[in-house]
Length: 79
Image (cartoon, rainbow, N blue to C red; front, side, top):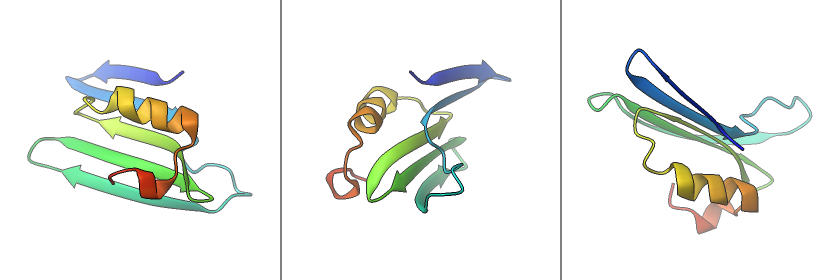
């Protein structure tokens, strides 16, 4: 259900709603490790995970995909 792309030796994974609906209010939580060239951005709507973008390190892809599909509550995720 997500999109995976590898380009210029960088991997990207995206799933769900990445904060694009103008009728919703989102909370965005990002973590960046520039030395390792990786970034993780989580999008929450109504306190539930609705979208994820991973750049570089995709090791959390499976777990976060499941969390998006379940619309897991923010307090049940380690962000």
